[in-house]
Every structure is written in structure tokens, then in C-alpha cells.
Length: 211
Image 1 (cartoon, rainbow, N blue to C red):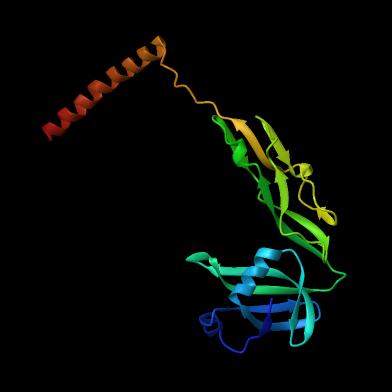
Image 2: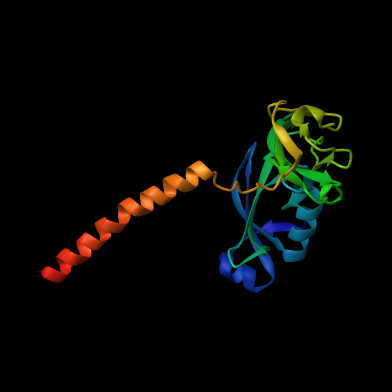
């Protein structure tokens, strides 16, 4: 990502097809920056919010990761601002990594419902060991089975922090509820109730007419 210090307002920067941002963190004061829109998109698609990479700012190299991305509220695919967090090579990062659910469409069968409970997990890793996502294979999931956090195979250098007993996804069979027909005894009760209510309504109507 080609970074340079920002000297104009965010509005003016965006008008030039660039994105305003800020860099902060270990051993650096907060600095307003900007980058070409395509550079920001490329970096975000490649590194996500977890993988570190190196940038050059005024001749100084910094190890950073994308801490936050803001998007247009009318178009969530349009990046309007970004935050870079500077780290050192010895730092340990704690963050949430999205899960890439493989084979989820294969589980969509008649009468079966795939319920997704988690789409990201909390992990810890050293700088340089981050990943943009973690794969979870659901293709082998059968009826009434679940995939838990403990079943996820994390890449080398990644430590899972999320509760191992948490359910990531489950496959269940949904039965259609049959409406029970009222029994003869229930029919009699309904008829008695209807008879009781009938005269009361007539009396109310009669009183209304007298008034």
C-alpha cells in the first residue's frame, strides 16, 4: 500500500479517488494518512483485518495491520476511511478472524436446515502469523450433527481463544407440525361456551336498544 501523509480534508481526499486514514500504535504518534482507493482495496482483500504487512511512510518502514475499515452507509462496499495499527515484530496480536465455511451449500437438502452460530472466532498469534480467514469444512456434516470450535483446525502459529464448546454450525431435520383435530369432548366444551356467550351478547344488545 502506497501511504503518504494527509494534508487535506477527508472530503477532498475522497474526491481525488483516495481514502483518508490514520496510523497509530507502538512507537508512533497518531498520523493522518491517505492512500489510493485501489491500493486500500487490494490490501484489504489480501490481508484482511489480521495479517500484518510493511508500509513506507516518509522513508520509514512500519509493520502494520488494518485495524478498522469504515464504509459508506449507503454502499457498504465503498471504503471511506481506514485505520492502521503499528506493531513491533515481537508483539502478540489478539483479534477476531472470520470463518470460511466450506460446503455449506451441499448441506442444504430437503427437510434439513443448516444453522450457523459463529462466523468468526477469537485467536491470538505473533506478528507475521496472522491469517485473513480460517477454513471450516461442513461437507461431512450429517443430520443432527454439529461442528464445534474444538473441531476447527487452526493454522500453525495460531492459538484459539474462543470457547471450544461453542457450536459453529449444526444440521437438523425440521418436522412439519400437524394440527390436531379437536376431540369430541373438546367439541362439547366449545359448544357449551358458545351457548353461554350467546344470551349474554343478546342481553347487552337489548339493553343498548332500551337506552
